[in-house]
Image (cartoon, rainbow over all chains, first blue to last red; front, side, top):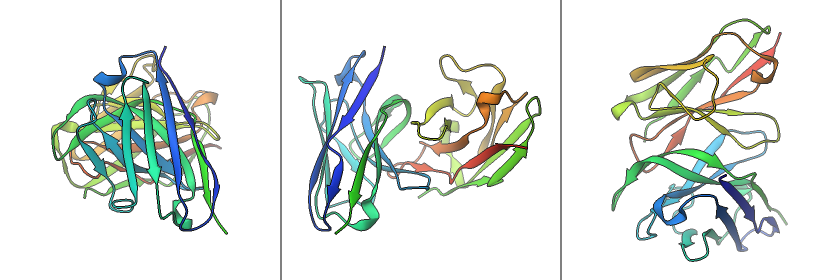
Length: 126
Length: 109
């Protein structure tokens, strides 16, 4: 059974940093692209970032480019999101999601998401 | 960037009724790379449909997807009590960014 468990959320001041982690199990982690999707309180879903199965290619939404870094450790079956220069508008529940089908190239990643974690809340406030 | 517009924003229906949800794209979605998700309050999204019309594993056949190009539809043939939720479409034919629609809430009438 596929299981995704996020951790690392919490309260951080504007301009601060936070690192999220997502522990995966139940599938061959290195074979699948992974992604972070966030949801601000009372709002819809927003794709944040994705990473290819090997970790060699990464992709970002414009709203986080240059501030967030996605990475993965396939030996530990863990996905990460390093978030720097955090802003109030980054406040959201952050979901880890497993890529389904599709493919990722050097410039693009075409995936839907067949499994999601339960999310971790990040609050950016002074 | 492909913008997805979902309509209606909210629909009020009774159990047993048919629900028809629309997702319109600002440009053609290649290879019908369109997915639908269900999200209940306080829960993570769940994949219902991918490739515009293929049901994900374990999804009941009362859920069906159709459409191509810029117009897509999610139909729930007969609403069960557990189907009252928010539904999102997502395109993965153009990236980055991957994009989601704003959601349609299906509420009990």
